[in-house]
Amino acid sequence: MVKKRNYLKTIGFWSAIVILVFLILYPFIWMVSLSLRYEIDIFSPSIIPPKITTSEYSQLLGFSKRVGTEGSLEELRSLLKDLPKEQAEAIMKKYKGAPKIFPFLRYFRNSLMLAGISSLISLLVAVFGAYSFSRLRYPGRGFMRKSILIVYLFGGIVLAVPLYQMVASIGLLSTRTGCMLSLLLIYVMQTLPVSLYMLGNYFRSIPYSIEEAAIVDGATRFGVITKIIIPLSLPVLVTVYIYAFMIGWNEYMFASIFLRGLPKLYTLPFGLNELFYTEHSVWGRMMAASILTAVPVIAMFMVFERYLTSGLTIGGVKE
Amino acid sequence: MNAKAITLEEREKILGWKLIIPALLIICSLILYPVGYNIYLSFFRVSLDPRIPKRFVGLANYGHILKDSGFWSAFGTNWLFTIMTVAGNVLIGLVVALLLNRKFPGRWFVRAIILLPYVTPVISTVFVWKYIFYPIDGPFLNIFANTLHLVKPNVDIVNNTKNAIWVVTIFNIWRNFPFAYLMFLATLQSIPASLYEAAEIDGANVWHKFRYITLPELYFVMGALVLLRGIWNFYKFDEVYLMSKFANTLPVYIYEKAFSGLPEQGVAASMSTLLFLILMVFIWFYVKKVLKW
Image (cartoon, rainbow over all chains, first blue to last red; front, top):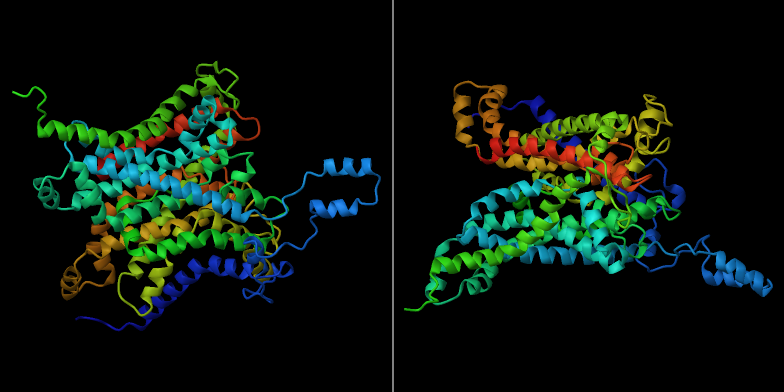
């Protein structure tokens, strides 16, 4: 091997690596550091917190109640004990009651449901659809295969106004379930093209001989799909599911359009962003919430990293 | 003899259609139809409340846009944002891919963390960036203003229409460069080492090797990347809006027009239609140059 040892090159190389790692991790280190701080230390300039506390996390997760200046209904009642009844009732009526707890777990559950269910539906529809246009022959198949990538590029803001109008005129926006349902369908729509593409590619790589053998033995096409293709593609199926899940977990725009005014239904992205502008917005707590929001996705990614990385380059990402 | 005998081919056709109908239904009703409906809506005065009937106004919405300085400013900002972020993404992605192309101790660590910005949910990362750029006390200004005295400490970078574009650009590059890195790395690793060795024997130095071997192999990937990233960033809403809604790129402007303040959905629809037409031009390039290469 012809290799020269160049001292300057090595120094340059390693400084580049150090700078890279620093720039990537800098925000994350701050996130962790801030989430473990007391409120007064928030802007203390050192990256290492002066004092460490996990109280933000325990409050978010419901392990401890917030000791604070917000009054709860019971506290208000006890304060008003000595007032004449009508006055007390008049004051109580006016009290709208700020949410006592940072509703993190509620948002978490909403996001989990929406992302989890929409990805499942998307996966199901995509498996059959992808099998269809990668294996079965019928007119129009080629065109559909090619247009998947193009349809994939539509989306976002172009669909915001029409979808809103469509859902509103059907009347789905007037009920809570209607709103959730429409958002669910929209998430399926957003993840379907990329799922179809990834699964289509994968199915085409499965040798046909396996299916042939099964058909010769008398299996129906449908049986081939369920008994052979699906078990064979389990890793890819999981990858596609996680992919779609990440898209749903992350989504902000449609959630903000369809869930507006229904705080009990907010997803994590929409809910956290709204909270940022209210009195709940304590830096430490927002950071803890940020980390807790990221944990499921990062955990999933770490476990399936190999598959997801190759999926990212083949299918691209909806972002 | 049997009048109902269906050939195998026909059975296959029927099954094929049956299996793809659900997917087709969803795509047509939730993607294709809305795009058409959007164009239709752009000719009406549309309100947020569906019970109020739409009023046909012809090309009035489009005329309104042409006179709207906010629109043109958002339009220009959008191009600026797209060009800067695509350039940043591609350059940094390329540099990082080159750096990580050869083995070195600790490479596993760098490879592990490099996807973190890309994979972490957007909402998780925006708050910390807002903190970093926080006026006076945030780390960025703390260092650059209070210690180095390069900038004024009370500059609000994030919530300021003039400066927000830089924050949003930096955030976008930080978040998305791993995608470019992945694509470049995949291509780089498929270049056979023997090409480089042969060049070295012929006396090529680092620059020659890069220019005459690496770069040509990367042309195609770079083209695909620029187009894809360009399309995605031109239409990006979530990342921009969540980082700073004052950044005023076109998608943000359309969103605000349609859903906040005094909503004018018809005007928003006409803006999205224009956006869509531009998208079709992009896609035409993508299809011609990348897909049917």
